[in-house]
Length: 338
Image (cartoon, rainbow, N blue to C red; front, side, top):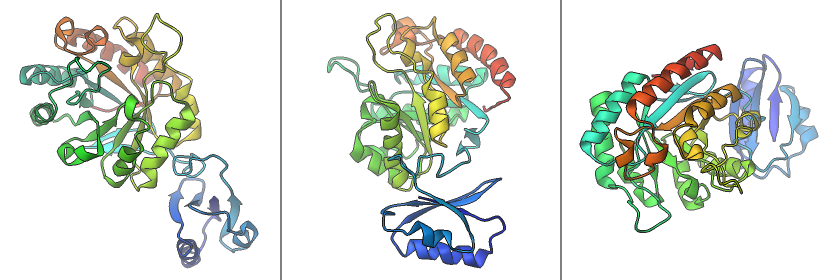
């Protein structure tokens, strides 16, 4: 339920109304925008008498939200959410590029890639320490040692780090991680999502291989319901009948998510394409569709990569891509972070 307040409503009366809702065990999302101020009520609102609330002197309108996701809903929070990490912003006109290898392999690799992507204009460093793989015989990542190498690369370059978590039991190990990534396979790991709702780190939530947009929104709702408002959506392509590409990048998901939710949306063209020659085109399309950022795989030696080398740009390719993207980001009136 949304309660829209009148302009210049007396503060004491607004506080009294807020206390009345809190006494009913409701979670209140207070949103003050340029054009309106509202309370978003989350919880059991079925018993609330809308006419009684509307009769309050400070209330301009009362509306019920029919969608199952409440806190993630743009009607609950009309202004775009900005997620800020180490002075870098994502959302509401701020555009960020996250870059790095699919998997952390060695200290020399991470140092080399981190320095290179930073010089090219990336705002964040990505790298997989824990790797969920289809085959149990594939490289599973360096795990805790990989986290240490990411932290070392962060200290050397100043780039905040983004890496994927596998279980709610790993949160203590992720103390030095700046943005915790929830991978496509864990999008509906509800125990993990609940725990991430209690932490105070930004969460990069990837869309599942075959999940709907509403299911993605509901996964974000689990995190938001726990009190963590720093959620970033990541569209990385969905599985269809098409075999020419790894995953179908759902460009239409970007404007839909931006219309339905206030949370930032970034795009991972590397996992969608499965090869390097499509990444530039998909990145351009993502910017044109309204994305708030990109996550791109970069490796110092893609043919020798232990994971997803075919879709990883080498360092000169990434530098050339960033030169192209900077012009397009500027044309769209966005502020490139980095």
